[in-house]
Amino acid sequence: MFFLLICWSFLLIYAWIILRRWRAWLHLSPVENSLKMPQTQLSVLIPVRNEAAPISDLLRDLEQQTYPKQNFEVLVMDDNSEDETAAEVRAFQEKSNLSLRLICLQDYPGLRQKKAAITKGVALATGELMVQTDGDCRVTPDWLFTLAQHYERTHARCISGPVCLSSDGSWFEGMQVVEFASLIGIGGASIALGKPNMCNGANLAYSRQAFLEVQGFTGNAHVASGDDEFLMHKIADYYSGKVSFLKDKRAIVSTAAQKTITAFFNQRIRWASKWPNYSGWSVKLLAILVFGVNFLLFLAFLAWLCGGLANEQLAALFGFKLSIDGIFLLSVLHFLNRKKYIFYLAPLQLVYIPYVLYTALRGLRGTYHWKGRKVSNKATKTSSPKAY
Image (cartoon, rainbow, N blue to C red; front, side, top):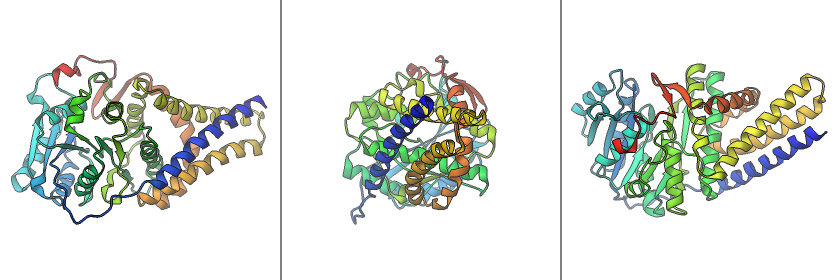
């Protein structure tokens, strides 16, 4: 009975937090159309490593932008790729009218990994607003126009944009679509509530001045991941109320779901490895709460297997969480044009609990494999801010 009381206490707190964010998400509105063309100079930063296959598609998307080409530049920062990424970018340069530059980190001794690539890109950029995405993403024709318009209207120092996954229709990728949508939704709604916690570097913008004012990644450069969230947290602390979420379909960036279980777990462990380094307690408490709810439900399942919980008691616990998640996710998936994927929520619940527990515990180790490298958050030798 005491165990059930603990479970329901955590679930009710969880429900209150999720429903608050659901309400905040519903009140976010898109950018109002205007006949006036924004004039902000943009620098599109694309840190890449081993992206030879998809990089040309992204560059073609940027070539098709409705934002005037004289108002933006594109910088591709190649982090010592082992494939033909640099060659693909050079080939595109030759036939494109984009203001496109290739920056190879191998030309700068001591520089490696994503944060070094971004820092070097900011140092060489000429724009007022840095717009960051990844080499394996696709963007809409109005992406830059919508970002620039939102920036000029809000004067935000950091803008988090929506990202969605594309799927091949398999159950594995379908469940990723739903899980990823929950992260984007929670991140956007939390920003709307004035409590920035999550964002995604595949669609992130920040003023060059803000990046320099908060000294970029100084203080967290030893953590290989977290270039997006650590930077947003620092800007939020320095510029109170100047972090914004852009909830506009024209600003949606898409990227492919992970194709293999190994790649999926390596990505999620990479994400989980950064949360112990968060400085804000509100962000840490939210992560602990989510972990706690899933851990208690896992224990409830074990108790049911051992005869300690009745069928209806277990069904009530899982059904309650499924309902709360469903209410929130239906709104987010509708915005992302992925409403039909809500049917993956139920099977996702079956694997989500052990998955969260596993990635959270593995993330505490701070080591993982990513893009052909074994990465450790404890390694500071190659990621010192002084080298940037």
